[in-house]
Image (cartoon, rainbow, N blue to C red; front, side, top):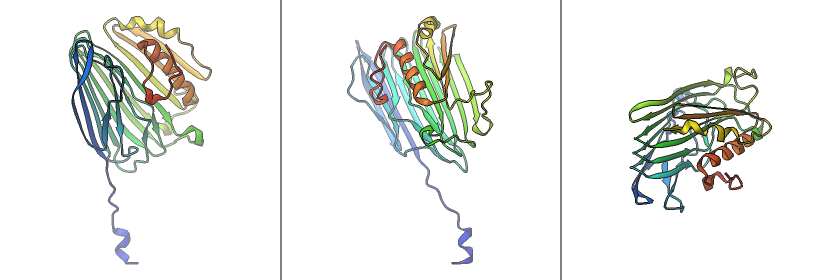
Length: 279
């Protein structure tokens, strides 16, 4: 073997992708106006009710690692309605160099109704993910947003001790901040204390934002909390927030499904494969 063989740097392949969808309202029907996609990002519109279509985003690279850049964008015109999700759980894999980055840009014009329910993000050992979700609401618009994070594959007995997540969420209404939150998680610092996750391996935030939506507090508090899940709900000034943590992901996902169905009054997206959860 040549002596200088060890000096050859391995060039890692990076994933890039951007998918954007624009929807407009034509009377009671919401229809596609524009669709653009490139690289590893895709957007699908499965057959659904024309009054509220579904948009399913996916990352065809199969996961996120060092240097990957994926972006999803969804733009609703006035009075348009949509339920958007992701095809499957997003997986953040080993990132030995720079972090992977995921950007989600959502906008809803006057009177539009946006529901963004991505499936869970799984953090693997050594992962490093930076994610930003930006939502712009017009006058009278509202949104329902979900973020769920799972630490490792619980079925395999995994519990990452070196994983990082920087998660920024920002919702504006008529250009003014309505809800802004920054989360920084270092799995190596996560303990079993009640001040952190209390031994949990999965946690989630559900945000219901828009004029008058703080009134949904009582409805959410009426949703039964399964054994093994700890949850709390608060509401104020156009915001209703649900936060939950669980030792196992599945009971948490069932609880979130019931909560989302209660807020929307509709079945969950088909790709969630939880049609048994009803309002």
